Length: 378
Image 1: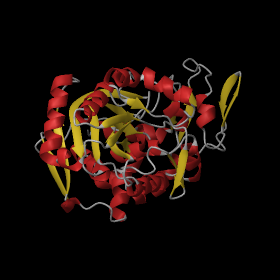
Image 2: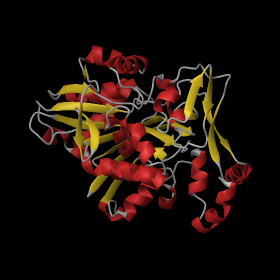
Image 3: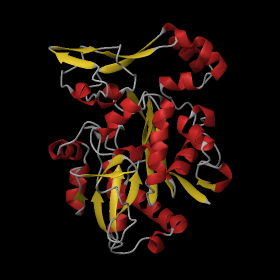
């Protein structure tokens, strides 16, 4: 049986957060038996971009601190690592650590920060050196997956399983978007990572979540007051999806996992402070509207349904990040930015990585109508 525990924790209060997480880890996941004092623990937060904690784009630094201190007090060496898309140099990564508040937490608590300086190919995917083994060999890192509860404009949600995408080395993420442009294809890559990487624990920061058109600055922070712990990343995501009231067929990750036989509901035990209630009016991304249309009707409407990224020239600072991360080279910078829509694959990497929220999604009239109708029935 897989186990997921959903806790109600209203705020980032250091003492309350640490006590509740520690008690839950011991009671439900027996960490004192499953972790040796000299184990090297690597905490893998979601550090998508340079963002302040209150923007709810990255795992909150206090969340990282509390979990790290729990293991530090058990005698473990604690490390923090991530490899956000588009950030390949140590200088880039150091800036993210600093801007997200992680660097200060690491220095205060004697955690070591790791950098994506080397990669090892695992199952034809270049993985960051600190993730390639994940505790399979003596003396290597054991990963604790510290995801953020967020929406995702392509995947609907990005939680514990999608957070493993940050174990892929550097700009290879953009290459994978190029090779797998459709949602189902990208879901397949994420599930491949799930089968390759097995974090020892998954702890999702849902105290302040990101709703709407996440996973970056187009999303809207929403306080949920939730912390979710699980021994399996996919089952942890399944429990969260259920708590948000999302049907399995409307969540690409859950739908594909069930088709592949990777997820069986009767193998999951959920212990929840929500007591079976679902979260009301959690705003999902616009792509969710398309996913929720029945396939026969969607096939008929497809010629009238369109999305495309558009540049807000008032917000744009010409930093060139979108040019760097576009997997098809469809964005050109020459005094102004221009998107070549003939080559755009709608992966939305540009919008996801824009530090100035300057790239939005333009919808066809039909999508706007469907979106309005959907809101009326929420």
